[in-house]
Image (cartoon, rainbow, N blue to C red):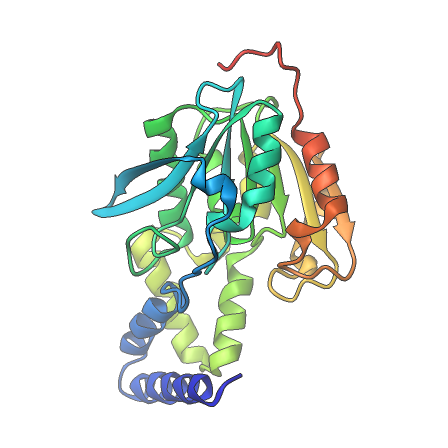
Length: 289
């Protein structure tokens, strides 16, 4: 970590803990802004496949969401959902292969990410972005999502009608929002009094406490066929969060557990991609409904 980054972290750590002495609610408000504001906008180079895509966009809460479409009119439609502080540009190999399979492919940068506008994002905002994208560009049959995109998709899917013909490839999904918050509070060494106010702030904004924003909980309402790919050494989205789903052995989830790929190398791995594309392959006589 660079000295400048360390100084910024120390500033926020000291500032938030000092604010909490005066008002935990005030500190929690500032902490929530920090938690939902990506620090880095990925400037990943534009892969060749993106130069061939149709640029598309739509308005979401006053911000322009920018993305791409390929193979318009394909037999089925697939949506790519990237993770936190990432961009859809990193999924060029997945997009190229999905086009060859016959899919119409959509890929957007989430709010406050990549080419899209905005300064902050949380899981419900991302889920609503998915909703609006589908309303604008048509029903989606298949999803490929990484990390933060996974929790957002689960929150969307549990609110709409779908069935076992919907396919979802979860790659290292952010399974429990509480784990992300725990990591954030550990990193900044924030006190429990701020955490209590922070959780209450989420309740005030969304109507639910952080425990609600959970793929494990949402799975009770999700009928889609799921391929869940996770690395046992993932330090960002810990596999311990997935253990309850292992134990439930739900019939609509199949797992692929890797070792040594971590959180970001996993979706670039050839064995992972082979398993994923085998999962999302379909009969080309099946019309888009």
